[in-house]
Length: 213
Image (cartoon, rainbow, N blue to C red; front, side, top):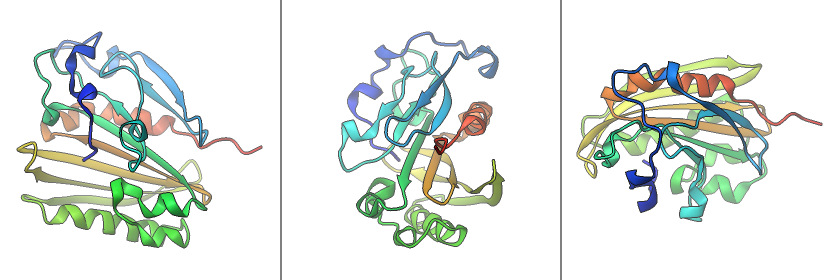
């Protein structure tokens, strides 16, 4: 799970909350984020959570990715197990140093060769293996799809996180155009997973690699 610094766990920053009886998807205000380095774009809800993307590298130079907080909890719920996060990480094929510390410090050696489907699946399995030792691990699904003429591979699983003393539900989606690889990680608890899944799906559907010139 991404290591979140204290400022992100402080719910005093959370503004424009939606009440529990409102339909989340119908009451969102969407904005577009364009990554300054890689140029990809993605739509995200800017009136929930902290309302803006957060660079994980700003909190820890050894960590990659941009965090989008979708948490719609009340002001009194600041526990990490109640959070809803989407972490988006991108790497160029020639960024060897970044690939070796990819996925929060877990080396993903197959990706050093090529961003083909076989290596992506191997990398996903290597990352997934670190979760399999956790209590109550349950693998739910893996799927290969075509995403806007790009290769996409997704996996979904649940596990018990001893730190948060809670079961978490995660979905990872790997997308590559051959030169770049992007991983979108949707992380929350099982109770909120289905509630926020349409929001994550809208974000995923909006994702676009930088247009080549």
